[in-house]
Image (cartoon, rainbow, N blue to C red; front, side, top):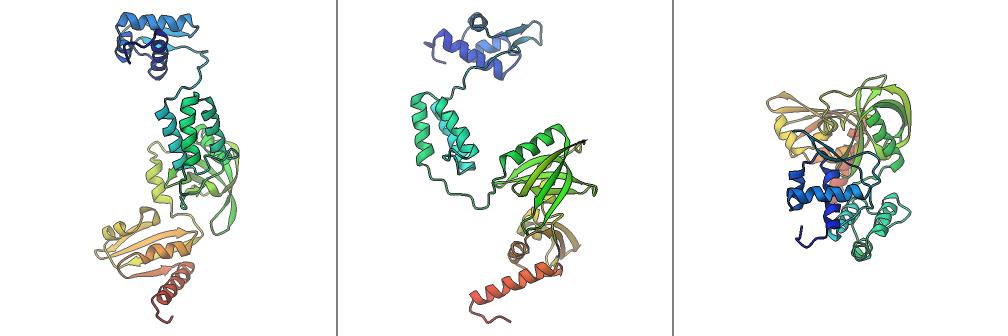
Length: 321
Protein backbone atom coordinates (compact mmCIF):
# COMPACT_ATOMS: atom_id res chain seq x y z
CA UNK A 1 0.00 0.00 0.00
CA UNK A 2 1.28 3.50 -0.75
CA UNK A 3 2.50 5.54 2.23
CA UNK A 4 0.03 8.37 1.51
CA UNK A 5 -3.05 6.13 1.84
CA UNK A 6 -5.70 7.58 4.13
CA UNK A 7 -6.55 5.97 7.48
CA UNK A 8 -10.00 5.13 6.09
CA UNK A 9 -8.48 3.33 3.11
CA UNK A 10 -6.18 1.37 5.40
CA UNK A 11 -9.07 0.53 7.70
CA UNK A 12 -11.07 -0.84 4.73
CA UNK A 13 -8.07 -2.90 3.66
CA UNK A 14 -7.80 -4.15 7.25
CA UNK A 15 -11.48 -5.20 7.08
CA UNK A 16 -10.81 -7.11 3.87
CA UNK A 17 -7.90 -8.91 5.54
CA UNK A 18 -10.01 -9.75 8.61
CA UNK A 19 -12.73 -11.23 6.39
CA UNK A 20 -10.35 -13.28 4.25
CA UNK A 21 -8.10 -14.43 7.14
CA UNK A 22 -10.17 -14.99 10.30
CA UNK A 23 -7.91 -15.17 13.36
CA UNK A 24 -5.17 -12.99 11.85
CA UNK A 25 -2.79 -11.67 14.49
CA UNK A 26 -1.93 -8.02 15.03
CA UNK A 27 1.66 -8.45 13.82
CA UNK A 28 0.51 -10.31 10.71
CA UNK A 29 -2.13 -7.66 10.02
CA UNK A 30 0.52 -4.96 10.41
CA UNK A 31 2.81 -6.78 7.99
CA UNK A 32 0.04 -7.06 5.39
CA UNK A 33 -0.83 -3.37 5.76
CA UNK A 34 2.79 -2.28 5.70
CA UNK A 35 2.49 -0.40 9.01
CA UNK A 36 3.54 -0.82 12.62
CA UNK A 37 1.64 -3.16 14.94
CA UNK A 38 0.43 -0.14 16.91
CA UNK A 39 -0.99 1.41 13.74
CA UNK A 40 -2.70 -1.85 12.81
CA UNK A 41 -4.45 -1.89 16.18
CA UNK A 42 -5.54 1.70 15.55
CA UNK A 43 -7.20 0.69 12.27
CA UNK A 44 -9.02 -2.09 14.08
CA UNK A 45 -10.22 0.58 16.49
CA UNK A 46 -11.50 2.67 13.57
CA UNK A 47 -13.52 -0.31 12.35
CA UNK A 48 -15.01 -0.84 15.80
CA UNK A 49 -15.93 2.84 16.06
CA UNK A 50 -17.73 2.44 12.73
CA UNK A 51 -19.89 -0.28 14.26
CA UNK A 52 -18.12 -3.28 12.73
CA UNK A 53 -17.99 -6.11 15.32
CA UNK A 54 -14.28 -7.00 15.31
CA UNK A 55 -13.58 -9.62 17.98
CA UNK A 56 -10.17 -10.40 19.46
CA UNK A 57 -8.98 -13.56 21.21
CA UNK A 58 -5.86 -13.63 23.36
CA UNK A 59 -3.34 -16.44 23.49
CA UNK A 60 -1.14 -18.35 21.01
CA UNK A 61 -4.14 -19.26 18.85
CA UNK A 62 -5.86 -15.90 19.16
CA UNK A 63 -6.23 -13.00 16.78
CA UNK A 64 -8.82 -10.78 15.15
CA UNK A 65 -11.98 -11.90 13.38
CA UNK A 66 -15.21 -10.26 12.27
CA UNK A 67 -18.09 -11.22 14.54
CA UNK A 68 -21.61 -12.18 13.61
CA UNK A 69 -24.17 -9.62 12.51
CA UNK A 70 -21.90 -7.72 10.14
CA UNK A 71 -23.65 -6.20 7.15
CA UNK A 72 -21.03 -6.31 4.43
CA UNK A 73 -20.25 -3.16 2.45
CA UNK A 74 -20.82 -3.08 -1.32
CA UNK A 75 -18.38 -5.09 -3.43
CA UNK A 76 -15.40 -3.11 -4.65
CA UNK A 77 -13.52 -4.18 -7.79
CA UNK A 78 -10.47 -2.71 -9.44
CA UNK A 79 -10.70 -2.18 -13.20
CA UNK A 80 -8.50 -5.24 -13.80
CA UNK A 81 -10.65 -7.41 -11.51
CA UNK A 82 -13.89 -6.27 -13.11
CA UNK A 83 -12.65 -6.75 -16.69
CA UNK A 84 -11.20 -10.14 -15.72
CA UNK A 85 -14.59 -11.18 -14.35
CA UNK A 86 -16.36 -10.16 -17.56
CA UNK A 87 -13.77 -12.01 -19.65
CA UNK A 88 -14.31 -15.17 -17.58
CA UNK A 89 -18.08 -14.94 -18.03
CA UNK A 90 -17.77 -14.35 -21.77
CA UNK A 91 -15.38 -17.28 -22.09
CA UNK A 92 -17.72 -19.64 -20.27
CA UNK A 93 -21.13 -18.28 -21.27
CA UNK A 94 -21.80 -16.58 -24.59
CA UNK A 95 -25.02 -14.83 -23.57
CA UNK A 96 -23.34 -12.42 -21.16
CA UNK A 97 -24.81 -9.42 -22.99
CA UNK A 98 -28.37 -10.74 -22.98
CA UNK A 99 -30.31 -9.16 -20.08
CA UNK A 100 -32.93 -11.93 -20.28
CA UNK A 101 -30.31 -14.62 -19.66
CA UNK A 102 -29.40 -15.36 -15.98
CA UNK A 103 -25.68 -14.86 -16.63
CA UNK A 104 -26.28 -11.63 -18.55
CA UNK A 105 -28.70 -10.34 -15.92
CA UNK A 106 -26.29 -11.07 -13.05
CA UNK A 107 -23.37 -9.48 -14.87
CA UNK A 108 -25.48 -6.41 -15.60
CA UNK A 109 -26.18 -5.94 -11.88
CA UNK A 110 -22.46 -6.08 -11.12
CA UNK A 111 -21.69 -3.55 -13.86
CA UNK A 112 -24.34 -1.14 -12.53
CA UNK A 113 -22.80 -1.32 -9.05
CA UNK A 114 -19.30 -0.40 -10.24
CA UNK A 115 -17.86 3.13 -10.15
CA UNK A 116 -18.50 4.92 -13.43
CA UNK A 117 -14.89 4.85 -14.78
CA UNK A 118 -14.56 1.12 -14.08
CA UNK A 119 -18.06 0.35 -15.40
CA UNK A 120 -17.26 2.13 -18.67
CA UNK A 121 -14.26 -0.13 -19.32
CA UNK A 122 -16.20 -3.24 -18.39
CA UNK A 123 -19.18 -2.34 -20.55
CA UNK A 124 -16.88 -1.74 -23.54
CA UNK A 125 -15.47 -5.26 -23.25
CA UNK A 126 -18.91 -6.74 -22.62
CA UNK A 127 -20.57 -5.11 -25.63
CA UNK A 128 -17.79 -5.28 -28.22
CA UNK A 129 -16.26 -8.71 -27.58
CA UNK A 130 -17.63 -11.37 -29.92
CA UNK A 131 -16.87 -14.80 -28.40
CA UNK A 132 -17.28 -17.77 -30.71
CA UNK A 133 -19.73 -20.29 -29.23
CA UNK A 134 -18.26 -23.60 -28.13
CA UNK A 135 -20.36 -26.04 -30.13
CA UNK A 136 -19.41 -28.91 -27.82
CA UNK A 137 -20.62 -27.04 -24.74
CA UNK A 138 -24.14 -27.53 -23.41
CA UNK A 139 -25.75 -25.08 -20.98
CA UNK A 140 -27.94 -26.80 -18.39
CA UNK A 141 -31.00 -25.18 -16.86
CA UNK A 142 -29.83 -23.03 -13.88
CA UNK A 143 -32.77 -24.19 -11.77
CA UNK A 144 -32.06 -27.88 -12.31
CA UNK A 145 -28.35 -27.32 -11.73
CA UNK A 146 -28.99 -25.45 -8.49
CA UNK A 147 -31.34 -28.18 -7.26
CA UNK A 148 -28.76 -30.89 -7.96
CA UNK A 149 -25.89 -28.98 -6.35
CA UNK A 150 -28.07 -28.40 -3.28
CA UNK A 151 -28.99 -32.09 -3.16
CA UNK A 152 -25.29 -33.04 -3.36
CA UNK A 153 -24.53 -30.66 -0.49
CA UNK A 154 -27.45 -31.87 1.64
CA UNK A 155 -26.90 -35.53 0.68
CA UNK A 156 -30.55 -35.91 -0.31
CA UNK A 157 -31.80 -38.44 -2.83
CA UNK A 158 -33.59 -37.00 -5.87
CA UNK A 159 -35.89 -38.23 -8.61
CA UNK A 160 -34.78 -37.29 -12.13
CA UNK A 161 -36.87 -37.01 -15.27
CA UNK A 162 -34.28 -37.63 -18.00
CA UNK A 163 -34.19 -37.61 -21.81
CA UNK A 164 -31.20 -39.15 -23.57
CA UNK A 165 -29.58 -37.94 -26.77
CA UNK A 166 -31.31 -40.76 -28.62
CA UNK A 167 -34.71 -39.49 -27.43
CA UNK A 168 -35.40 -42.15 -24.79
CA UNK A 169 -37.08 -40.88 -21.63
CA UNK A 170 -37.11 -42.36 -18.14
CA UNK A 171 -37.50 -41.46 -14.47
CA UNK A 172 -34.90 -42.65 -11.97
CA UNK A 173 -34.09 -42.13 -8.30
CA UNK A 174 -30.43 -41.37 -7.58
CA UNK A 175 -28.03 -40.43 -4.82
CA UNK A 176 -26.33 -37.32 -6.30
CA UNK A 177 -22.67 -37.62 -5.36
CA UNK A 178 -21.17 -34.70 -7.29
CA UNK A 179 -21.66 -32.20 -10.10
CA UNK A 180 -18.66 -32.13 -12.43
CA UNK A 181 -17.92 -29.69 -15.27
CA UNK A 182 -15.91 -31.30 -18.06
CA UNK A 183 -15.04 -29.68 -21.40
CA UNK A 184 -17.97 -27.26 -21.26
CA UNK A 185 -20.53 -29.89 -20.22
CA UNK A 186 -22.13 -30.38 -16.81
CA UNK A 187 -22.50 -33.91 -15.47
CA UNK A 188 -24.15 -35.48 -12.45
CA UNK A 189 -22.22 -38.37 -10.94
CA UNK A 190 -24.64 -40.53 -8.97
CA UNK A 191 -25.76 -43.97 -7.77
CA UNK A 192 -29.10 -45.22 -9.04
CA UNK A 193 -31.87 -46.95 -7.10
CA UNK A 194 -32.81 -49.72 -6.80
CA UNK A 195 -30.01 -50.98 -9.09
CA UNK A 196 -27.21 -49.33 -7.02
CA UNK A 197 -25.27 -48.69 -10.23
CA UNK A 198 -22.87 -45.76 -10.63
CA UNK A 199 -24.05 -43.56 -13.49
CA UNK A 200 -23.23 -40.26 -15.15
CA UNK A 201 -26.01 -38.03 -16.50
CA UNK A 202 -25.76 -34.88 -18.60
CA UNK A 203 -27.47 -32.14 -16.59
CA UNK A 204 -28.62 -30.31 -19.75
CA UNK A 205 -30.75 -33.41 -20.46
CA UNK A 206 -32.39 -33.44 -17.04
CA UNK A 207 -36.02 -32.37 -17.51
CA UNK A 208 -37.03 -32.17 -13.83
CA UNK A 209 -35.52 -32.65 -10.36
CA UNK A 210 -37.60 -33.73 -7.36
CA UNK A 211 -35.89 -33.82 -3.92
CA UNK A 212 -36.82 -36.85 -1.80
CA UNK A 213 -36.70 -37.50 1.96
CA UNK A 214 -34.05 -40.22 1.83
CA UNK A 215 -30.45 -39.30 2.66
CA UNK A 216 -27.19 -40.99 1.70
CA UNK A 217 -23.47 -41.05 2.45
CA UNK A 218 -21.11 -40.78 -0.54
CA UNK A 219 -18.00 -42.99 -0.71
CA UNK A 220 -15.29 -41.78 1.66
CA UNK A 221 -12.62 -41.97 -1.06
CA UNK A 222 -14.75 -40.40 -3.80
CA UNK A 223 -12.73 -38.77 -6.59
CA UNK A 224 -15.50 -37.22 -8.72
CA UNK A 225 -13.37 -36.39 -11.77
CA UNK A 226 -11.68 -39.81 -11.99
CA UNK A 227 -14.94 -41.68 -11.41
CA UNK A 228 -16.70 -39.54 -14.00
CA UNK A 229 -14.11 -40.48 -16.62
CA UNK A 230 -14.58 -44.16 -15.80
CA UNK A 231 -18.38 -44.05 -16.03
CA UNK A 232 -19.12 -41.76 -18.96
CA UNK A 233 -19.54 -44.79 -21.23
CA UNK A 234 -21.69 -46.84 -18.83
CA UNK A 235 -25.45 -47.26 -18.61
CA UNK A 236 -26.53 -46.02 -22.08
CA UNK A 237 -28.98 -47.61 -24.50
CA UNK A 238 -26.66 -49.28 -27.01
CA UNK A 239 -24.11 -51.90 -26.00
CA UNK A 240 -20.57 -51.86 -27.35
CA UNK A 241 -18.01 -54.67 -27.50
CA UNK A 242 -14.99 -54.25 -29.75
CA UNK A 243 -11.69 -56.13 -30.15
CA UNK A 244 -8.68 -54.08 -31.28
CA UNK A 245 -5.54 -55.66 -32.72
CA UNK A 246 -3.12 -53.72 -30.52
CA UNK A 247 -1.79 -53.77 -26.93
CA UNK A 248 -3.98 -52.08 -24.33
CA UNK A 249 -1.44 -49.29 -23.67
CA UNK A 250 -1.48 -48.30 -27.34
CA UNK A 251 -5.28 -48.30 -27.52
CA UNK A 252 -5.43 -46.14 -24.37
CA UNK A 253 -3.35 -43.51 -26.17
CA UNK A 254 -5.58 -43.51 -29.26
CA UNK A 255 -8.96 -43.28 -27.57
CA UNK A 256 -10.30 -40.93 -24.87
CA UNK A 257 -10.51 -42.45 -21.41
CA UNK A 258 -14.25 -41.84 -21.31
CA UNK A 259 -14.99 -44.09 -24.28
CA UNK A 260 -15.18 -47.28 -22.24
CA UNK A 261 -13.36 -50.01 -20.34
CA UNK A 262 -10.21 -51.43 -21.95
CA UNK A 263 -9.20 -55.00 -21.08
CA UNK A 264 -6.11 -56.84 -22.39
CA UNK A 265 -7.03 -60.09 -24.15
CA UNK A 266 -3.40 -60.99 -24.72
CA UNK A 267 -0.15 -59.13 -25.33
CA UNK A 268 -1.32 -57.84 -28.73
CA UNK A 269 -5.11 -57.62 -28.45
CA UNK A 270 -7.46 -55.36 -26.45
CA UNK A 271 -11.18 -55.67 -25.66
CA UNK A 272 -13.27 -52.50 -25.40
CA UNK A 273 -16.55 -52.73 -23.46
CA UNK A 274 -18.92 -49.77 -23.18
CA UNK A 275 -22.34 -48.39 -24.04
CA UNK A 276 -23.43 -45.28 -25.91
CA UNK A 277 -26.45 -43.17 -26.66
CA UNK A 278 -24.98 -42.08 -30.01
CA UNK A 279 -23.69 -44.95 -32.19
CA UNK A 280 -22.80 -42.56 -35.02
CA UNK A 281 -20.45 -40.55 -32.79
CA UNK A 282 -18.98 -43.76 -31.38
CA UNK A 283 -18.31 -45.15 -34.84
CA UNK A 284 -16.38 -42.00 -35.67
CA UNK A 285 -14.24 -42.40 -32.56
CA UNK A 286 -13.41 -45.99 -33.47
CA UNK A 287 -12.54 -44.97 -37.03
CA UNK A 288 -9.58 -43.00 -35.65
CA UNK A 289 -7.87 -46.21 -34.46
CA UNK A 290 -4.89 -46.82 -36.81
CA UNK A 291 -5.09 -50.65 -36.63
CA UNK A 292 -7.76 -53.26 -37.47
CA UNK A 293 -10.63 -53.78 -35.05
CA UNK A 294 -13.82 -55.86 -34.98
CA UNK A 295 -17.25 -55.08 -33.51
CA UNK A 296 -18.35 -58.18 -31.60
CA UNK A 297 -21.53 -56.80 -30.05
CA UNK A 298 -23.75 -53.84 -30.86
CA UNK A 299 -25.96 -53.98 -33.97
CA UNK A 300 -26.58 -50.21 -33.83
CA UNK A 301 -22.83 -49.57 -33.77
CA UNK A 302 -22.31 -51.99 -36.66
CA UNK A 303 -24.90 -50.14 -38.74
CA UNK A 304 -23.41 -46.75 -37.86
CA UNK A 305 -19.92 -48.01 -38.79
CA UNK A 306 -21.24 -49.41 -42.06
CA UNK A 307 -22.87 -46.08 -42.92
CA UNK A 308 -19.69 -44.19 -42.04
CA UNK A 309 -17.59 -46.54 -44.18
CA UNK A 310 -19.87 -46.03 -47.19
CA UNK A 311 -19.62 -42.26 -46.78
CA UNK A 312 -15.82 -42.44 -46.64
CA UNK A 313 -15.71 -44.62 -49.75
CA UNK A 314 -17.99 -42.22 -51.58
CA UNK A 315 -15.83 -39.30 -50.53
CA UNK A 316 -12.78 -41.07 -51.96
CA UNK A 317 -14.60 -41.75 -55.27
CA UNK A 318 -14.95 -45.49 -54.63
CA UNK A 319 -18.22 -47.31 -55.36
CA UNK A 320 -19.95 -48.62 -52.25
CA UNK A 321 -19.73 -52.41 -51.74
